[in-house]
Image 1 (cartoon, rainbow, N blue to C red):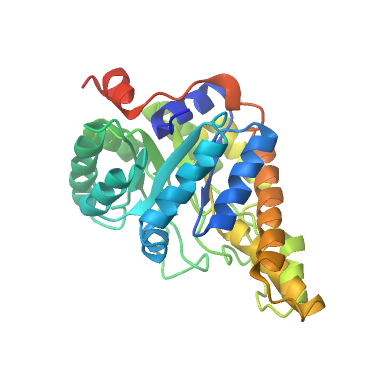
Image 2: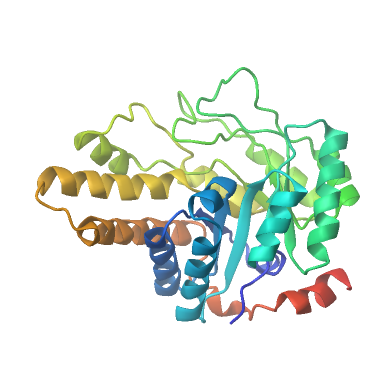
Length: 323
């Protein structure tokens, strides 16, 4: 089964009223845990890499590890996605590596420049059959009140942006933040905004900054020597509410990092004689699998792997972009 485009996967999710988890990866164990979770739950999945992950893995290591996962599990539709690309050149690098989807994030720039850069990436990527995600509005940083950087997505502007750029998916700002310290109190998200933008744009929407920071995992990190006081994420019911209203892709990074870290800390504390990486990375891989399986069930993805057969990038060029 070929790698799947984001456009095809999210169109299926939109029809089925569920969302695909988009899980960031940096190493082999994360990839193995994610694909094992997808296989066990029979879920389509988005495996995504940031610019930092590509640099860390020297590009080709990551590419070939993900291709190995696809080869070992041909029954699972897999989207290989660039997360938070910052330029056309970054998108070109990902496309050359075989990514089937790229995100261009020019949301921090003035609106007109965001449109120009996004359109440029769309025109380039679509010529290869590659899908494009963009962002409008801005998320917070580590804390919810970082110097007023949060800017919710405007529905009218979102409609204009989609029409002007031709993007396949739109990441919207509804009050979430990146990192483990998203909120200082119970989060209040602009969930109604999701439904308004979904209806106005008729595009699959994306939630960034959506790790839920499981408190039991956080407790283990702190119990075994970590220092993550007061970390708080997006509650699963809030994510599920957003999915019901039009979100089709949910980004998860912090939670899988925490699952691995908690496991490794526990082993190092309880078994100080362990020095074989397989003895702590193996359990960390299993912890990743269990975390991702829970997300796939929560997002409604489980059981949908057999709903469709991914088409190749060459087919996508003709089917979606008329090229």
